[in-house]
Image 1: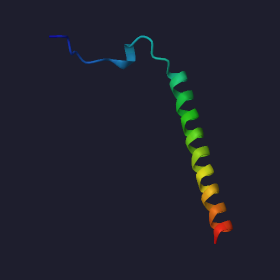
Image 2: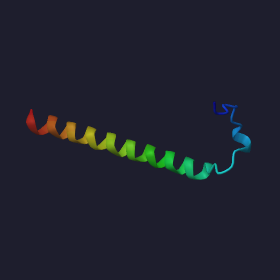
Image 3: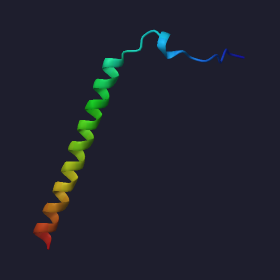
Image 4: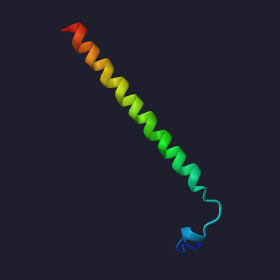
Length: 50
């Protein structure tokens, strides 16, 4: 069987934390923009259709 030893992240090579944090911030911005767009469309539909 393969070795299933515990991974120690503090010594793991190749972890690019600044890139991960930037990607997470970008994900949050896109999520907020999408949410704002949907809310705007729903409000405009309520205004013009009622």
